[in-house]
Image 1: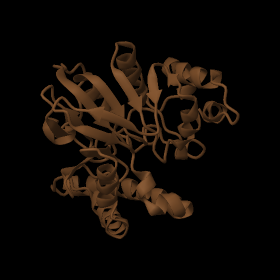
Image 2 (image 1 turned 180 degrees about the vertical axis):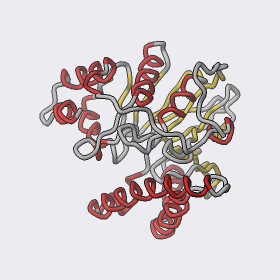
Image 3 (image 1 turned 90 degrees about the horizontal axis):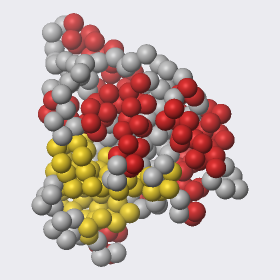
Image 4 (image 1 turned 90 degrees about the vertical axis):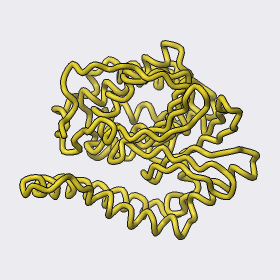
Length: 302
């Protein structure tokens, strides 16, 4: 498998809606090159960013930014300028944006909402939420959540070296970090009944389904009579949920579909403070009247 070749032709697939989450822009683990490739290959009426798009937890520790991260941000803003309805539902890693939610503002044409509602072409009413509010570890044990995030980052690093050795020995790519993560996440889900809790909440509120992220596990199935739709992540699974023009919903595995290599190295690091698109976003954030303005912290970290 190969990484994305230069000057690749991008025949655009037209969707009614696209849902992505857990891109974790600002971290080395983000597969921003694949995400940029996906965004260039699709057009849609609605683009829902379902949380953990920018990793605010890393801003003060080990911020990473390269040309692909910059391109992802540029493509999202370009879509908003072109008339796409872009809705950003912050998650726990980009919770700094939740301070702006009571103001009902837009940032560069992107609407910020705590949660969203979408009606499909088939008339199905979907609740869109990141899902961290149904995770008791995130809600009630922040230190454990931060430790878990650190452990996951270490697992991703270990995974890279593990697969370099496997490749040299002639074995195919196998995600050690995904396997380790799944053991922990499945235990958490078993305790907290994450999927069932989300589906039951959506059902009680009259929704036909719920779209979420958070656990980095793409899935689409019925739970207690409600559609449970998790669009996955862009760290390992590199997946998105799409709605076709007729209302049909589908999970897209971008790596498998395009036979891409997860061992591709990130591009050289760049200073995000020199990025025109980052400057535009931080300038709009800085102009928003807010008693506790997180834009200053973001600008300082950048």
